[in-house]
Length: 186
Image (tube, rainbow, N blue to C red; front, side, top):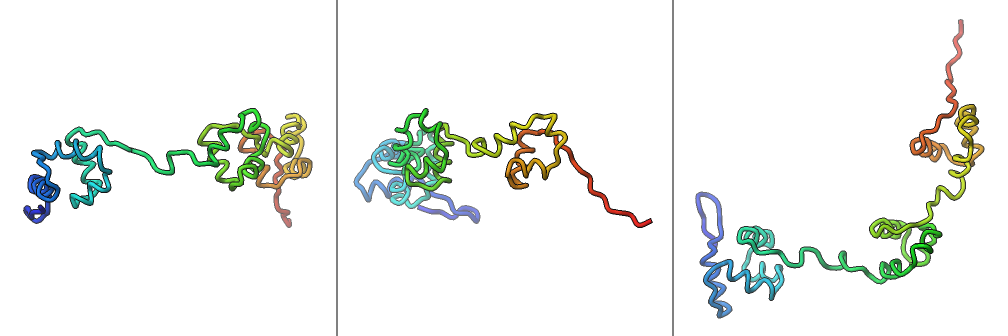
């Protein structure tokens, strides 16, 4: 089955096929014929175990013979579970009125998982930031904002400095920057 060829090992495919024919009483004449008849009936994992080769080796051979892969993706990641089905059953108009935390509580899942599901399926939800403090920040007129310092804006909105920096990065609004210098003793 395996032969040493110039320092490397390679698979003797004709011998592998004849061994399979002896073991299972089949009469395959070529590797391509064997794959075409067996692959729809048994999974790639079982076929790789029976032949004693890796799944990756079989993928390479399938590509060589032009055999399409079945079941490219599957399993639990591809089929929606009960929580996903429950989320998809909620009307989009209702979801648009709820925050991620409210949706997560309704489905009894973590907020991070809820956010991933909403993003994966492109579903709307109420953004938490726009509910309060960011609305206050956006409600300040630009001319008034230009006269305010960072600390005044943070105090007026009731936000943290990191939140204010995120808003600045997001909206690129101009505010009054104070340069703090040190006193010189002359």
